[in-house]
Each structure stands twice: as C-alpha cells, then as structure tokens.
Length: 306
Image (cartoon, rainbow, N blue to C red; front, side, top):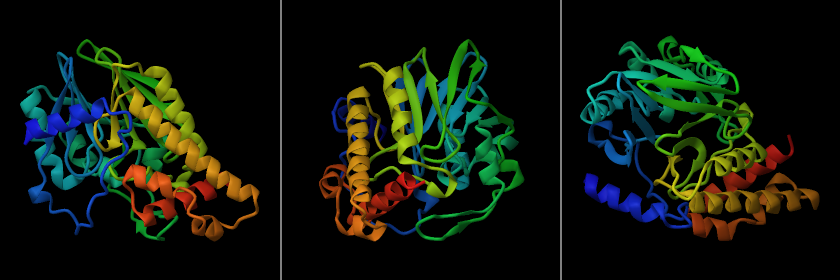
C-alpha cells in the first residue's frame, strides 16, 4: 500500500496541474478503525503522512520531532504509531496550520503526550469558541481546553529541534484568520495547510472567520517566492506538489476571482453570479462537483464584498 501511495505521489509531483484530480465519491462518515496512515519519505528526515483529514508533515531532528497538524482525535494512536516507525524520538512541537477539526482534532491527546502545539493566536481563539459555517449554518462547538495551543507566535517564528529549524509563517485572512505555513529549509519542504487544497476539491474560504480570496492568492504568491523547482509542497489536502503545480493552482484562483469580480462589477447579485456558472471549466479541470463550484463562487463573492 505504501509503495502504491509513493508511486502516485511521485507521478503527480511532476505533473503541472496537480489540482486536477477525480472527484471523491460521496461517502458516509469515516470509519476511523479502517483508516490507514500512509507515509512518504521526502528526504533529509522529513515525511508526509496521509490518513483521514489534513495531510501531516513530520520532521526528525537529533533530539525530537516536529509535526504539522494532527488530523482527527480517533487517529491519534495510528498517527503516533506511524511516527514511531519513522523515529523513536518524542514529538516535541506540533504546528497547527489553522483551527479546523480535521487538522487539530488530535491536539489534546498529543499535548497530553508531552508535545507543545504552536499556532497563530486566532487558532486558539476559534477553538475556544463556537463557530458557525457561513454556507450551511452548522455550528462547531468549542474544543476541549486541552486542545488549545500552548504556544503562539506573531507573524513569523523559527522552531529549532535537534539541529534543525522550521520557519513558521502566518498568512493573514486567507483560508481563515489564523493560517500558518511551515518551511523546512534544509529539506526544501513547504507545508501549506488548507491555503493549498487539491485532490478533487477547491480550497475553502472560511469567510465566517476572516477568510478571503485576496489573502489566499497573496499567501500562494508568498509560497511561490520561497519555492524552487525542487521544493516539495505538502498541501492541506491532496497529493504532493511542486512549484509548477502551485503556479497552476494560483492561476485557477486568480481566474475564479477575476470572473466573480467581473460579475460584481456588472451589478450581479450573489445568486446571479452562481447561476452564471463562471467557473464551469475550472470545475472540470479540478475534478470538483457543481455544488463545490457554486459554493466557491459564493465564498469568493462574499470575500470580495468585504
């Protein structure tokens, strides 16, 4: 299974349009007992873990490990076991790329294990309160106190662990109001969180908590400045990417923004903009559903009107 996953990632790494993937079939709530944690070696002691929820990045130093995101709480033991196969060293730091539960669900259990979760201050703020989904109205209740990050930072920080360093960077008002990316310069690996989200889906712009298409594009521009042709980019969801794939992803975002902006300038309402189906061709390329396209148009429309 691991070899198949690695082969698939390798083929997509050098495909220019990595965000073009078949849409996932409709599925019932996940059966966590059946989830496998797959590991891909990115070189120089750095790994990508894929399970259920957001992708995880793991980097090993001489005295400890740093991990990016924690997926769902029921996967804690499986993730911990997957990391232990990589290295017996303890997980020293965990960086949350944002507050969503598929990236922070394991926080409490990993902090009980002794790890320190690090994040932008808005991650703790969102986890500590209920949040209402702007599209569905669904309410996410507050997380347990133990899930709140123990350490916060402003703008940028560098976490050092066993001779290695992880540059953590806040991207304001992008996917959410508390996004972080993590760059491991010695391995040339960039973990983006859900600012970059592929694999048969569009990125979610969480306008309820300050998400904005303009910030999303600005963040991707920052990542393109960091990346070179050899950079391995771990998106929040989807397969491993390279810089060419990230450039294609940016073009998709810019095209969608510009088309919705034109409809706004023409005086169209949000419902009119959705009915115009301005990104139907992008939908086909991204492998996303018609409903996903409608939702993206709504979120872009709302963020441009902020």
